[in-house]
Image (tube, rainbow, N blue to C red; front, side, top):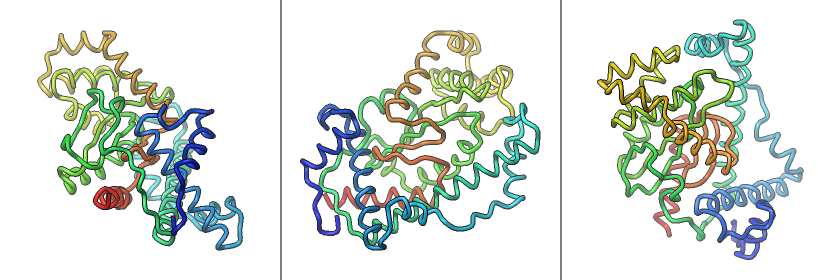
Length: 307
């Protein structure tokens, strides 16, 4: 980085420090890639903090500092789209929660943009790359869009009752349209305990997938204002699913186990919020914009082309 190498020995030392003594050989390719990206980010922050004569904590604060304007119109739009998700709250409490969520997302976007600027300021050349594509545990029969030969794999952890998961779908559609065979999208379920119908929705989507209608069911769920067993049945009928097979799957062990596997996988990667993404193994949290996806994808494509 900036002409100073990060040695293999230091990388192994770093891995052991964050995993409780494991070597890189004991991790999946995705976990190694995440660790390397985190190490590079840490070094970037150290270099910039030294250059500015401040602590790393002060630098992090500077990267997110500044007024964040969340307009009433933005809050009202988010509330109108997701009012059913906040049925147990008063309207004022729901609006304040949405305002805080929108503000936090804006600050995270500002932080990520700041880190991207540091990557341009302090040149980084990665020569230790994980093989393109996901590790087997991330590509285990989950729903997929895009080419199997894609250079960039986006693994999405999502919840059908999460309003921000719904908001990011347009960006993901644009990515698949824009990058064609270069990007693959893998879907993983991460229903929240705080969302009453999200686990059932995940099972319903899985069962639709058993009849080759996952993505259609996925889109219908995100388009629905309210989720319930009745809504799942309505969507199933609309998509022409075999109702007896769908109902048996919904009540069967296979659908529950499939969702639990995704939840356990998220825990292994320390993913605890939605939407979250592993982009070639690098963890990105929040409903990022199409432009932010583009920045990350272009960097991955460039790294691959130079190695």
